[in-house]
Length: 455
Image 1 (cartoon, rainbow, N blue to C red):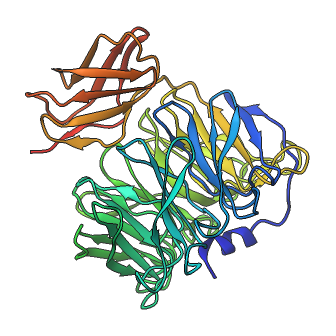
Image 2 (cartoon, rainbow, N blue to C red):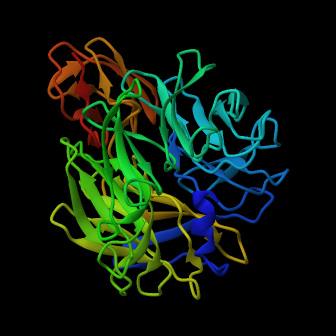
């Protein structure tokens, strides 16, 4: 049984939704899914060059096989593509913005072998199948989009394959050939590339104790270490992400020491494990974390849980470097009707977090898109945050019209403002690894991550 099937089985009811707020944070329902325009979203949202958010719903749409959608900050929603089978069915992950301005994603089913596809979509919604997955390429059933590696290639995980329960793959530069680099056991939807250049792959189960493991793999598929979890450390890996400090963070669905409510953990650059938090089932904590934690622009981690919180229906939380976990919003099955967030929240460069729920919404909706404003300031984000002197860096943000300067740790760069939410800059001589800054009419915007100057 695929991993998401187990998670869905944890949820017992549908819900009735209403926008709500609490604890000084503003929670807003932006869109309710009702079926014809999509339903049941697993997706982590992605920001495009136009500042809007793009994502997928795993079901619904014109053929009932899922959709790709676009939604802006005001909540204006539009279906860009309805999946029909040959070009994909059941998109369970979100999208990756490529350096060409197109989006890249996968579907769990569909294609020529009904084992899923890897596709490209233009901002206008035209979908092209790049790879039909199945026995011909030794990889089945992807649950997340491919990611861009530091070398510019796309890498990803599939949940199935004929010789093992999952695969770690790489696409060639033409995006027409897939090479399986490493065989994993039921890997979580996406790999993470660490600051050391290695890829970290979390396996849902397997390992020495059967509770899952994290493997460190080179870009050529060589093993660079593996760590097996026991139940007190966490059981059944849910996902990984890269922190602002360059360490790798992740969550386990169960296990730990907090009534088996799961755990939050970190691997440092030497691949040493630290357990940061054991989720509990109290009113001030969550249980069964959903998706991997996201590094926010303030240095905290942000995530969601399926259960726990004030109403027992899960929470959105922040985790501070000092070890403090704070409940920011409590989902409420019986009142606000928001429930079942599968993916991590995504932080738009306007500072606001956005996410999806699998169930819930007003008037018997089948999931929703929400925002959570915790008062963080706007910032800039880079499509890729590594490059050599002379390379072009793509920058996402807002208020770029009238920009007067772009700096890489003090080194002045030449730049081109393409539109109010997207500009490009050339890495200047003298640039060193550190924050990037854009001096716009509204003030100085700082990157949420360091730009790494590659030698």
